[in-house]
Length: 229
Image 1: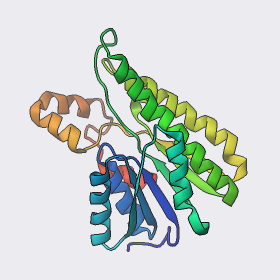
Image 2: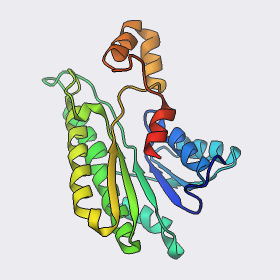
Image 3: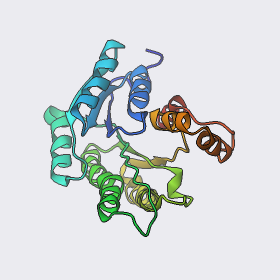
């Protein structure tokens, strides 16, 4: 354990996507936290927990469906059973439906809004109720630079992440004086599996990602995890 900043605290990593879940969980684990990994993909979630346990961290898995507010509320209730607390809740909800706006399938649009925006609200609402009762807590929304700058062929994720940015600000303003901080982290392109695979198939695509990044390189999972911590 590198430090004990979060010793005795419970951190929920809700959703995976973009390879960030394990990186964030590891960083909080090194800080002493107990990790609750909530993932719609049971196998992926349990694999993450297994890695964390093998590395000596405290972790457990919970089944998760962010698009269903009742199931999200039930998850929060399970975690809070017996006086359990939630100190940090990380919304790491991601899906990417690319395509020209004029031909984008309606289902792709709905999935983007339902998961990235509505899912984050349902999670924040349920976790927020718990935190309001206990008098403290932090909710972190992992969004994207797509919420700040338009990208051709990305109308659905751009709109969903822009909504998530404003949701973060609105909740932050509403709950700040009641002991809850709601903050956002908006990474650019990072070296997760998707960009590596994409870059392997098309070197020009990696150069494009690098060129539009001020440091002229891709970010790393570790950098994002440290920022979230």
